[in-house]
Image 1 (cartoon, rainbow, N blue to C red):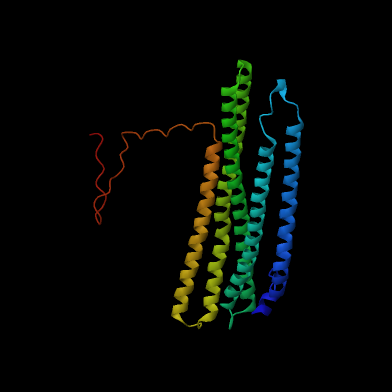
Image 2: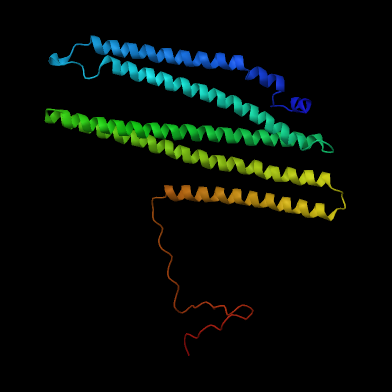
Length: 304
């Protein structure tokens, strides 16, 4: 089975996979990235803390932000980023292993009596689906996290501005702080809404990209059934017909979803209201259908 996987372009052999995500290389890569980013954040924390400590206070008033507070915040961020990078690398390695294992299990189902071309088409279809799903999931996750961060930033700006307005002594300072806080909150809200729309588009894109490979799966299944059964088998004909019907239904659903999305986009961009359709003339009365199995009821007379 390993040799068959080796011959298929785009897939790694077991040895290449082990070399790519081996424990030693994985640990070294994660440690280097984590330590580098962590030390950078610690350096920024020390620089900000030193600047706050050495900066002279205004009118003899001590700085509002102690040096230890800024340093602690950056150190906490370094720890969080360290853990995020480690989890991200582990998830990536596990996904590569799972992808390789799923491909082997899929190709093992087509062993014996199946044309090599069909096996290669199955592997290509698997790659296509995996690639599309990975891109869509990555975009959706990034957009969701960015929208959450933007929303949190808007809340922090609003809370900070409210605190500044309440603690300000002069009216001019309070007004300036309120205006800046409102503008900052509006900007953060706009960024959050933009990323939420991107998240929605990414999820819709994942559904769209998954549809076409699904149609290919049905077609490959029909071809596999046609090769597996005898040519004169009536069961084969029914199974192949059912599979092709499912493929046509999936393709029809995909096209309907595209049309609905295009119509929705056109409706959102429209700025002119369409006039209401005219009411039917009272002189024209359509025939009303009678009960099931009976002819339509006669049209009522409108005049003598």
